[in-house]
Amino acid sequence: MRNDREMVIRMVAYDLHFAMQYTIHEDNENGSYTMHFPRSAVIYPEKNEKLPEYLRCRIIFQDETEHIYEIPTVRIQSYSLQEIHEKHLNLFIPYVLLRLRPKLDPERKFPLEKKELTDFVDKVMIILENELEEGYLTQLEYDDYINLFRRAAEKILEIHADFRKEVDLMTKPMIELPSVLQKRLYDEIDSLNANKKTLIADNEALAADRDALIADKDALAADRDALIADKDALIADKDALIADKDALIADKDALIADKDALIAKNNTLTAGLAEKNALLADKDAELARMRTLLEQYHIPVTA
Image (cartoon, rainbow, N blue to C red; front, side, top):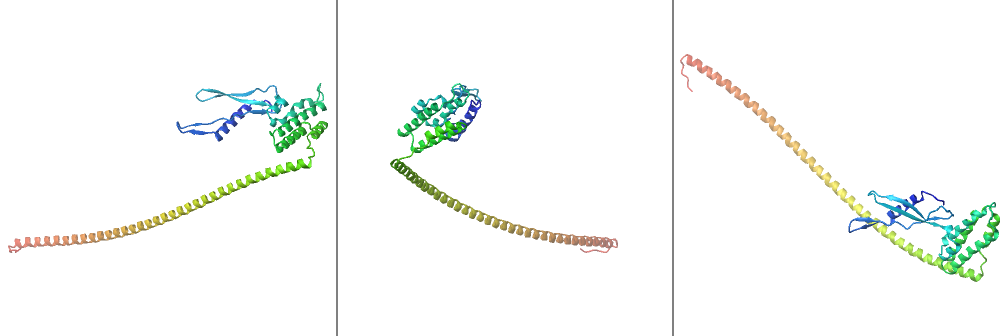
């Protein structure tokens, strides 16, 4: 990884995402939130003199306050093998061969020689063996670092077959004595048994969680069935109300029909009464005319 000017921007985005996802907590006293940014660093495996000790980004907030966001850089090639050993920085081991790459150029004034390479690899092997003996590495971790170192050598020394062969010979696992092999196998068996017990415990916990989920699922299904039953009851009540409403509408229509019949009958009676009144008016007019004639001829008229 070289001097990437935009790396600090990506780190700010990464740290913000990490803080938002894993560190936010609410302050119940004032209702605000707090989040903690991780203590990140950028590791550079290759040597680069232009790399600063910190990557910096000036952040201006909406209230115009500012904060200089600093990300420390870790330059693996600036650590000597002694420092790596003293600080137990075993993670750097697979990358240390990169410091020899500039000397692989045959046109350099002092190109890499076989003895310099073997001395360097020997120091690396001694560091790993000491870390194993002092308990900073397990046998499995030790084997992993050896394999990573060998793979790094294959890549870095890809076109330098003689150098690659030397590294391969120096890092190839030695033949184990039966007693050593037996102890290592027993240790691996014990480790596997411990892992097996852990896995069994995890499986039991998962089974318990599964049973709890099934119980929750059954409870939810029962609640769902109860809701469906309530819904069906509400639909039945609604249908009954609609039927009652239809019956009331039918009764109303019947009353309206009766009312219309009464109105029609009343209209008929009113017409008959008007006709009768007209006949009576005609009769009274006729009687009045006859009375007038009788009076003209001096004929007495009795009531």
